[in-house]
Length: 476
Image 1: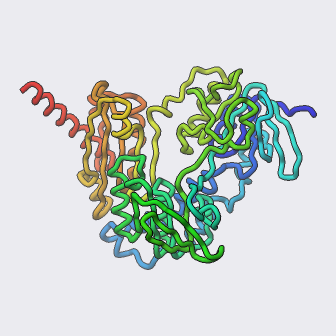
Image 2: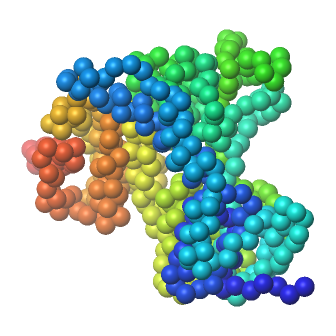
Image 3: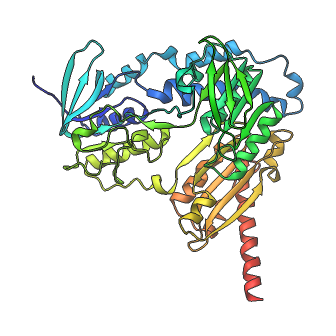
């Protein structure tokens, strides 16, 4: 058998893999993309796009009800059927014809099937019909196989019908009662989406002491208060002890660690994901299947001689977010081309947004993480409602803005914003962190009036006042 040869072989056709192929094409490299499912992957069909589409109707309706004048014009309830139809349109009915056409325009070769490493720079692809092809890479193989959902070892949970992120974003009907196991981004977004789409009862169960446990404490607390106001149950510091159904079409009965029982029609398991590396041939190159692929800051796999294997996106476990996978794709292809690059954002400035109401938009380090790694920090916090734009947005628009400042270098190392539409001001914080812009220089970045970005001015003036008070105290 003669191997099909390409400059680069990308295994995995999600957002990161697509981006890598596009970068290869732009650089004049021949590339093959190996994918067993839909081109576009999790983000396009079962995560970012459908989940945010499901959230949008409720967000628009609530935003209108906050504004006197507009509130009086809002009549009736959400049309869940129309919302689901819009979701179907946004996912192209779970067809990837558009992405395939894009690949053709890029000059890339699509190879349908399951890809696995079988040697140095060699990938075996097994098609759905059992046919096998072997591809050879002249320069590099890029692994972009993403991640898969994780079901925790809870009594009965693995033996009953549950929802994962694919089920919850592709559901054909609104569940009357929904249990959400896990209070991270996926869990809280889907809890609020389905509650606003018509679920009568939604309960979030989180083992940690707050929702969004990896973010600043106030973020999870504000989301929990908002959930309480709209009738979403929140159980934090609580574990699921067991789950059962009498039959596949019967309700799920969830027993908590304190003995309480909750009955629902569906249970969403959203406690995290694991890299999809169990069956891609890692053992052939001396790496451990089922574990994240270890990489350096060029995204080249460590421990694999020759520097030909790269891993981008969720598969390496560094920053499992769509935009970070695309960023890593750019870095990896530049490295393959011999350019001096380093994925510094993976360490310094990972932006993340939870699209609940209130939104939680954060980048860089939390206060706790900064202190854990020994950075001397000052924390400055202001209320979003102190900015005139919040009042313009409507009644009872509240939130929090916080900066984590490295006092030794006088630069921002972390930022968190909560409230409606705060995702729009997150990138300014990302630029400040990546650019290491001194605090005194940031005062000359004048925000437009009246926009939410004025919260930056409030933060900077509060920090300046704090420094002056500290200087006065030290000199006193």
